[in-house]
Length: 322
Image 1 (cartoon, helix red, strand yellow):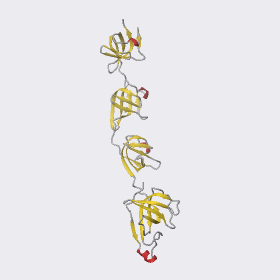
Image 2 (cartoon, rainbow, N blue to C red):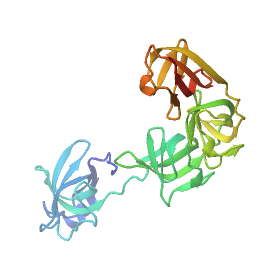
Image 3 (cartoon, helix red, strand yellow):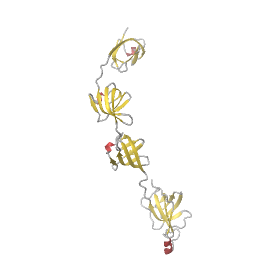
Image 4 (spheres, helix red, strand yellow):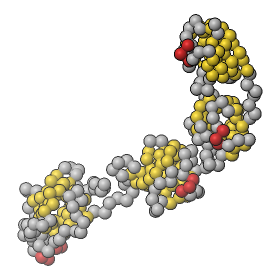
């Protein structure tokens, strides 16, 4: 986007030229008389006409001029509809806003007009394309990195980005400066993995993520499964996610073997109640003297298995009784 000049009409009186040359006639593009310099945007460009013509829109105030190039005047290279230009004219009669141009030049853009500076925490992405909150940022081979390198553009990094914004609102970074990180909070969490896998899992309500730098002790990433007892050390990010530096597997407590006899009071083969005891089955559960279809309220059964931390009986065997 070109800078819109505040100069609407700038008059230069060249009295000496008038005295010496006797002035130029109307519409002849001479340099005598009153020389006006006007800045505006080009529209309706007829660059193949003889002579070339275009419409000049000057703001403020909003005024439209029909411009015809005078003898010997040429259009500047690169001119197009929308270009910002400076038109000089010595026409003395512009009552109909029709002027003869004695010179047409492209106006230089204001290089600093779209300079933007954004400071904040990288929330997602990598060095090529990342987000600072809701601001999309892209870099190029020309982008300068200060107090760090492209490899340091990771979620959680604090940066100060300077560049220009394109028509889609994307910030093209000229410079990315890394700011000193606030001291991260060291956290240690112990407990049972309730869901997830080695990449991302939950210990209760605490989200934990790992990386290629995470160390696993007394086990491997493959052992990160629901039910595993672990101790995790790492740092919390701004969203409260624990980035694990170390995951240590703890010795499992010996599971308690339980046997329950009684009448099924509610439920079905997948999950049922024997009195106040919740029982669940799996594809590994063995059914004796009956099948899963026989698990209905009123059936008398004997269930054997192990209790989990929530007191639920995971049945290894269900035997139907007379």
